[in-house]
Image (cartoon, rainbow, N blue to C red; front, top):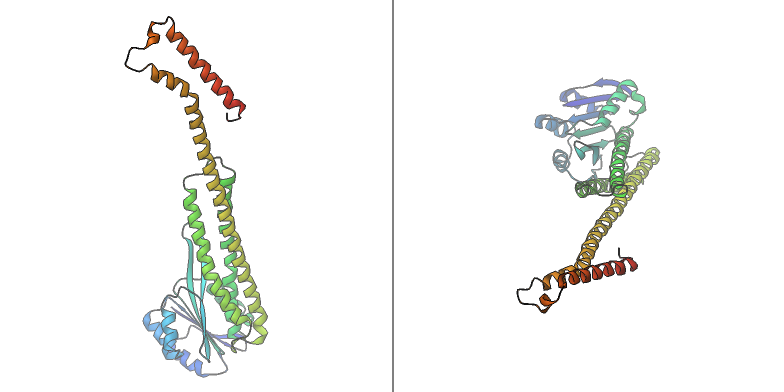
Length: 323
């Protein structure tokens, strides 16, 4: 799908033009163009990326392929930017969607293969009040990036709730569920994936915020620095959640070790308490003629000795506070 919007003096003057019309508009230096490619066909991608804008073949190749990590490249007349929007829910867990930007002085081309709420939000705002985002393509790119970063907060809230739930299961429950370790591993992987996405994006935003690229107007640098601060906060929060997970996991393992030691202690005490009975019972289980067979009340005496030794051992263990 090809969605296009043409602006003049902050006003939306045309939308959803075909490639031939876009080529004509592209030649008019007084107009600003935003073209959004949503899951385009190979023919649509070629018509826009090659025929209308004549982007570098390497940039086009990177755009159409899936890139795991964010990056930014300067092609003099435009910037090629790869960023990732995130989503998190209990059904799909953590996932990312790539969004590619071609940012020029008079144009912005975006490409994504899945629906993105930030793109829909930008289109809705343009249709209602184009002046707020259509004064420059770097301004529109900032709006998209700002909406993308804002979408991290609900995801962070969900992850925080999941980590808190795991902590409660460890600290408040007497016995942890067997699935807790698996949930620990899943949450840790999600936080690790989040940091692997956010940290390169933070590096990219740092380059944009410090004015490294001439296509980003100086007036917008404070806005990009604000985005950099938000990404730093996200990374810090993810690191703190990882530390919480490790702490809760240590508590869980220590609790499991303690419970195991208690079981071993009980078994050891049972073995110690039954030792006199075992010894005496083993002696009288021997298959030979014992002298005490001829002693009157020998069995009664053996029982008394057994009881005395057992009670004495119990009292000794109690005094040692091992019972």
